[in-house]
Amino acid sequence: MKLRRSMLFVPGDNAAMLSTSFVYKPDSVMFDLEDAVAAREKDSARLMVYQALQHPAYRDIETVVRINGVDTEFWQKDLEAAVRGGVDIVRLPKTEKAQDIQELEAHVARIEKACGRPVGDTKLMAAVESASGVVNAVSIATASPRMVAIAMAGFDYLVDMHTRRSTGWEPELFYARAAVLHAARAAHIDAFDVVYGNVNDDEGFLREVNIAKQLGFNGKSLIHPKQIDLLHKAYAPTEEEVSRAKRVLAAAEEAHRKGLGVVSLDGKMIDPPVIHEAEMALQLAEAM
Amino acid sequence: MKVTKEAIAGTLESSDLLVKVAPSARGTRDIVIRSEVIKQFGKQIKHVVTDTLDKLSVSGGSIVVEDKGALDCVIRARVQAAVLRACECKELEWEHLS
Image (cartoon, rainbow over all chains, first blue to last red; front, side, top):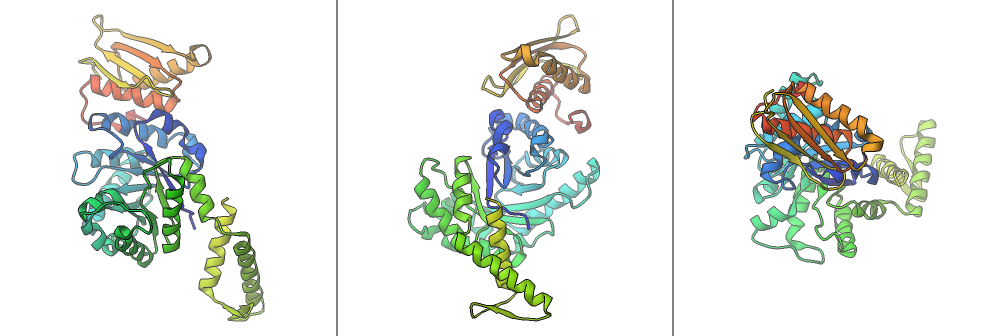
């Protein structure tokens, strides 16, 4: 299972960040052609991203390109650059409904055929940023077999909801987080929490990370490299959790060897969800 | 591809480059490269610039590059962007851009 805790935003026209972001080792690098790039620089940024995608430094890291929304004049050109450049995942912002994903998918398939990539090779993810997007999250998440993740984007959503960000447990985002997360789990895809904009506020960032982790998000979209290590450490299992995970897997292995259907450890039944949880804990531990 | 107007792409920030492209009065292709790392990487920078121009079939024009330590992929992208702007090209032929 691909680990997706951290997805680092990299402005598509920022040469320095395009040249260095891989060294911070986020789980995914997301080259941004949308909000981070001024309209008059879209053409240049598109070429920067197209070239960066082919750079050997990005061969061993999952690449994502956030294209412009389907209501803009830019998105199809962005898509050409991303798919032809060999991107792993295309992220569609401001996704409102399943048809947005289906339209995107049709164009991705067309470009894959044109450039010789296997059809289906490019994966998709959607960012929901409005009340409509949240309400339609399940149909969006299940709109295509290419979908691998869905992300919650907070800024536009809160404007749409006539509210603003608070501190604490952030009740204004609770429904949307829960809806997006349920959509992701129902579709068996990953879920990303919102970005935390204040890069100098580690305490606030970690508070939000803990909310996302506790709810069940796979990770967060990040806007600064310094947030990567904080996030990964927060998602890392404790030594006790790692120890128990190893014992769970050992007990399950022994039960399998003996042909037993069910086994218990410390008086608790070890069933497939417990085994899956143990495997996830070890994967997170090994990634540190 | 014919250079029809002046155009620039890129910035003078670290790890980037500024590329200025303009029509050439004599019809020749004139390349000027300035870089902080010209002694170490001058040949490589020139190779990337000329290769990029060749693939775009740019046979004439003034191309001035102010490099600030950019990677090859950034040089290629900025040269392409400046040329495509200078040629007023709207439809990209991707096979010439890799």
